[in-house]
Each structure stands twice: as structure tokens, then as C-alpha cells.
Length: 326
Ligand code: XMP
Image 1 (spheres, rainbow, N blue to C red):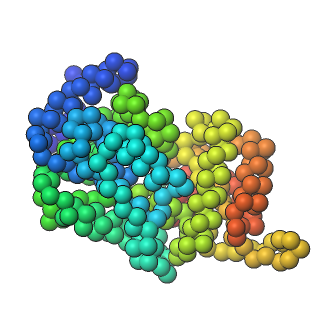
Image 2: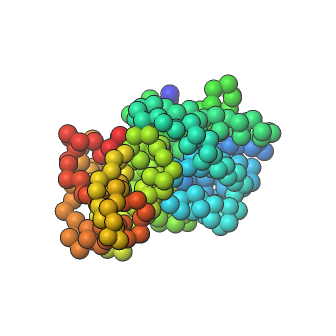
Image 3: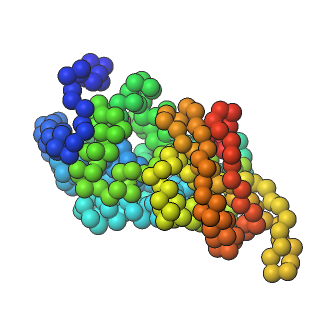
């Protein structure tokens, strides 16, 4: 517990120089800790695990074994970006596992949100555990624990995050950013040369699109959600809204409504657009988005996404509504 407390004397990382000094310090510490052993890391592509990966690649190169599990609930292009940045640009020792079918098969006909979360979390541990057992010479497990995780969740990486520690595997932990606040993690990420899109990525729940494809997930509705979400992100980027809005995404409920397509009656899904501003995700307000952006998003989704006939904008603040729909 002692070394889980941020010393009062620890300087806040607010400049690239301080970030570089932190990186040098951690490189030395990690090398001293792991020696010539191998270190395993579940690399989701989120800010924290990406920064840990980039830091450890600098410290121990291919002694770090990154495992990226694609649970089939990632946003469009996300796993591809992890592969591009870590395998192609940083020469990481990266194992990519496409476990889409495993997850979607397990989730078939499951509509209860908590059951869905539980299945996704449990399956993730199974997949990661299976992979870990195939590796030889691994003594350490790296984790992207950050200081708020320690303060808020007794050291457990965000309690509802996907990716706990597989039981029965005994690793020593490597947690190089565990005393950092989020803004400091981002500062270190930039200093390590990670792309801005990764470092400033908006929060994305561990269960991913699984909690935004409401009710029992089907592949066609998940496809519609992924495409609609990509359009929303693209239009936010184009219109300078990505930096102004804290979190924004699409949701596809498990219901249909009537539309007309090519002169024929259609019975298709709505897409709900959700955008919020918040400081700590405990309360949230809904930003007033420019009408022309809402119109463009609507027109594009209706024209480009199969199976969708309506677009809605959710105006509900938190509380009473939560940010996610499930
Ligand atoms: P809610 O919906 O509770 O969301 O207002 C608050 C913040 O937490 C994120 N969230 C999750 N993150 N696993 C996660 O890692 C989850 O199961 C989960 N559920 C919600 C949500 O995206 C928002 O930023």
C-alpha cells in the first residue's frame, strides 16, 4: 500500500520536459524490476494501456508481449489502429486475437445489461488467460492502473472495466503509471510519440459497443451501430467538435419504426445520438450542437447505414439519465 500513495513531493507533470524525465525514470525502474524476463500486457488501445505499452517498449523492447483481444465490440478501425501503431510503427511484440465469434456467440439472445457486461468481462479473462498460458518465460503482468483507479477502486483497474487478472496465474505486477493523474498520462503519451487520436481518445467502456447495441446483440444491428458511430465521429472531427465535447457516440435500440424507402414501406431501427459534457462523469450536461452538423449526421446515417430509418438526439442530462443507455 505504501508505494501506492503519491508522495506529496511528487511534482505534477505539466510540461514535455517533466514528461521526459518521468519516462527516463520509469525506464530505469522497469529494467531494474524485470531484468531479462518477459512482461505480458493486455493492450486494449485505450489511453492507459497504450501509454504503458509505449513506455515498456522503450524500456524492454520485445520482452514486452502485448495481447490485443478484439471482442468484436470495438469501434470501427480501432483494432486496426492498435496494430498499425504498435506492430507496424513501434515494432511491438503484439499478439492480435480476433475473438469476435466467441464473444458474439456467448452474447446471443442475452438482453440483460448486467449479464451482457458479465459475459464480456468473463470471456475476456478466458481469452487472455488462454493466451497467457501459451507464452513461456513470463513472470510479470503490466497494467495501466492510474492514480484515480487506486483512489476510487482500491487499486483495481476501474471496477467495471473489461480485463481483470486471470486467477491462478501468478505474476508480479508492473504498473509504471499508477501514481499519475489522467492529464499526466496524456502528457507522457504525447512525449512517447503516440498519435493524438489515441492519447486524447474519449472514454470508451470496456464492454464497448456491447452496451450501445441495446438488448440482445445481433450482428446486423451491431454493424449498423458501428457504421453510424463512425459517421458521428467523422462529422464531429470535421466540424471541430471532438475537442469541445467530452463523450459522443451512437446507440441502436432493439426496436423498429416505420419508414419509406424507394417508395416501399420499411421497418427499420432508429439511431440515437448521445453527446455529453462532464468533469467527472458523475453528472453530465447535453451540449447544444450546431443544427447543420445534426442534419449532416442524420442525412449521412440514413443514406449510408443499412437498416436505419430515423435519427434522434438524446437531450437528457445525467442525472436522471446515465451517459450510456445500458
Ligand atoms: P454512465 O453510463 O454510468 O457512464 O453515466 C459514466 C462513464 O462510465 C463509462 N462506462 C463504462 N466504462 N465499463 C467501462 O469501462 C462499463 O461497463 C461502463 N459503463 C459506463 C461511460 O462510457 C461514461 O464515460
